[in-house]
Amino acid sequence: MSKQASSTTAFAPASIGNVSLGFDLLGAALKPVDGTQLGDTVTVSDASEDSLSVTGRFADKLPPEPEKNIVLQCLHFFREKMQAQGKTVPKLALALSKNLPIGSGLGSSASSIVAAFAALNSHFDSPFDQDTLLLMMGECEGRISGSIHYDNVAPSYLGGMTFMTGVESPVSLSLPLMKNWYWTVCYSGLSVSTSAAREILPKEVALKDALVFGKQLGVFVHALHQQDASLAAQMMHDVIAEPHRQKLLPGFAEARDAAKESGALAFGISGSGPTVFAVTDNEQNANEIAQWLRTHYVKNETGFSHVCRIPEHGIEIHQS
Image (cartoon, rainbow, N blue to C red; front, side, top):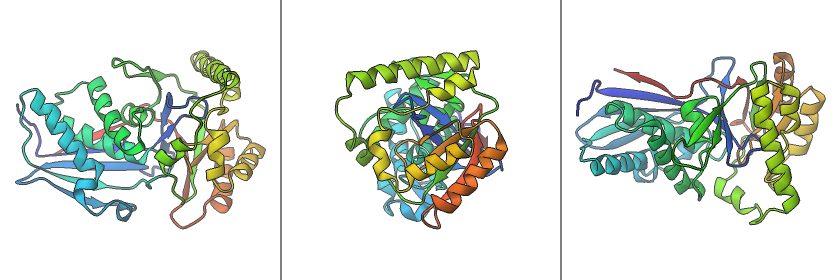
């Protein structure tokens, strides 16, 4: 097995899980319009022994012990899968630039996982195909959240808006995008555990809610293919998680009302929260909502708000 580079770097963007109406089934990648890199970066380099270094704005929020870091766990998992194919992975130095807040609802753990697996796979001449990698990413993500799901790892890896199939191949389908939609996201600065946010949900869903969920998801996908923005926006209401999770998000109702008054077509919780998102069809409204959220929804100095688009491509890889 040959390698073409001594160092490989992968950047994986932030993502919105659920997209309100698609609990565990829909995800969307995010790219700020101002050029901010909203996501995590992992660099893999040849070395004499395994190691992990961590930098970035939110590095101090991670466990100090390297073995507890999901990026090093990704290396161990990748090595196991390679050994199962009769291939050897030598010692490596991994470097994580942690730029997404933990427990933010922006796919923070998924971004690190996607960047790690993408960098490792590319570093060794891509031994695993797209679906195999996604299955590996989802399994590692499940170790953190308590259940295997792909609505963050898939869009972060592939870009665009993704629909999870529930089968091993293809793991995810890419959906058409509304080209004129802007996605304003705001992280409050607080933290919500994904596993805790799942625990707050009921174990069973009422039949009427299940019917609404199925109707909304089906109509939404149809509307995307028809490029019917008005119909798609009408479907973006969460009947599964938001009624229960909004109590974990101080100021959510006020933020939703303010966004709607400023022209938001839809408003919801990104993943498990506390990040919220607003969909608009023009940049001016998006910026107005972002400013209101910065002033009223952000709770401390770690919070932020960005006006984003959904990029058509996810992972970015560079070798040297």
